[in-house]
Image 1 (cartoon, rainbow, N blue to C red):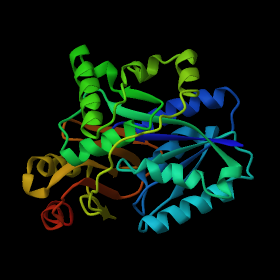
Image 2: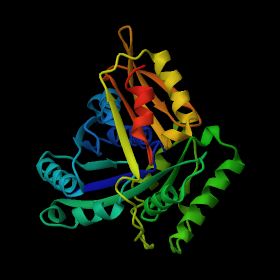
Image 3: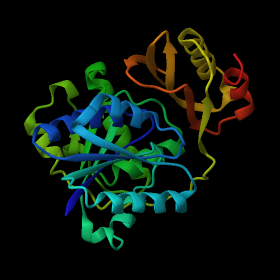
Length: 308
């Protein structure tokens, strides 16, 4: 049976970056790997980044769009079609706002329960965890509740106090969901560039937790993604609009802005949060800006992004 790992993490936690490290380790061990990007939008920036950087180390597939039933059906169809392709392990990267029960339910249905075996659930958490709304806190707790391992990102940028505060925050978020799980022995707090074979070996055998907690209802419209396609924005224009967008509270609670810009013949990948904007060279891109957040006001955001 093919092992399936789920890599969860709230918006902007660093799932895609972690997967690049994880796949490199597995590939060096001779494993044939596939990645499924399971997201809501018609364009998946993270898929393009992974395919660009991983090359032949892994095959990157995509499940997109539609309501929950449509997305589940497409995910099941994708897994069935991939089952005969000789993969040793499939890694699933869902949206940053994801109901992990959906993953377990699908993998326990026929015929997938005869094809696949759930391997590990790994939750990525930003070591410099920003202030979260109660809804975001719930999503964070619900993802961590199932994880066999919790991996902190940006450890090299965080102080020991910030790291401890993040761990304490996650523990408190779990308790608010009436989970009695203690996470202190399940947290890997280490610069990802310094991870060793021993660290990865533990992660590949970390499995998952039962994830017992009280579930809450969150409106489907609470978290939203807005897409701005085929705009000829310069990189400087995008950087300016990012600052304005995060500064304007009437936009709603903007959590992340990501996408691409073409500067001359060079594609630039953009990944911005309230705390910082990261820009990197990539081989391929597409003219798109994606804004993700809570209770977004599209009219206000359109005023910034529809026409510069």
